[in-house]
Length: 325
Image (cartoon, rainbow, N blue to C red; front, side, top):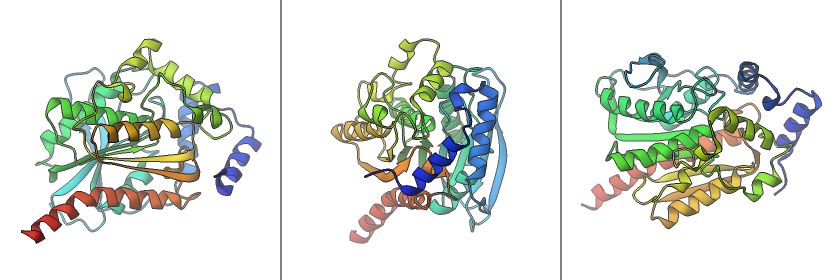
């Protein structure tokens, strides 16, 4: 299917104003530009029952405590024990923050009825690979330890992210399996990059003029990795892990007109071949980043509904089993 007319009009507008691309800016300017872009198209942030700022104290890594935000959905009763999504934002391990993803986390929280914990993991180039992985794993283990205090249900934890955050979420699914827990109910991967060592046809087809530029992806890699050899580490390229058996069920959401589309599709096939329950959705005519652009694409809401359905499936199966017995 060709590029959606709304995607086409938005891209034409971006090109018409002739703003420099992210990879053409200093990192700090690129971060501000990325935030402004998300702010401009995020829509009105939804009210939630609570949005609590947290600090995750840690001794393992440099940099002091991790900032985080815990969202509880509208209508949640005080003290109610909620399932929880650990959300890891995108931005090529270099851009993105809690403020930029606040509207998305609120919408995700309300759409699913789950709490959402969003940590502010360290970014490159100040903190290079595997700092983002270390912080994501620390956040997941902290969540498991502190769940009772926060009235969160450790039997229902999901990991989720978009783009670079989806890569981190996929890595967490592997790490949790290998560590014997926490047991994850779902991994939700929105246009993930799972194999940084391979060139995919979609990378050539959509790597220019479709928002996420090939040069920008190379720039992200330059910020995050000290050497290109690090891309071969499964913590950078989860598709390269020795085994994918026994992983949490996966929902993989791709945009059709995205350089990462073929990567996500191949990861879905790889997980399925390993016996993992996978639902792979490709949104026709959409470009990278569409899920957080509420004021541009109603498909953002459709993606939220798909995520909510994926998270509800285990509960529905359990209810059917109880009915039979």
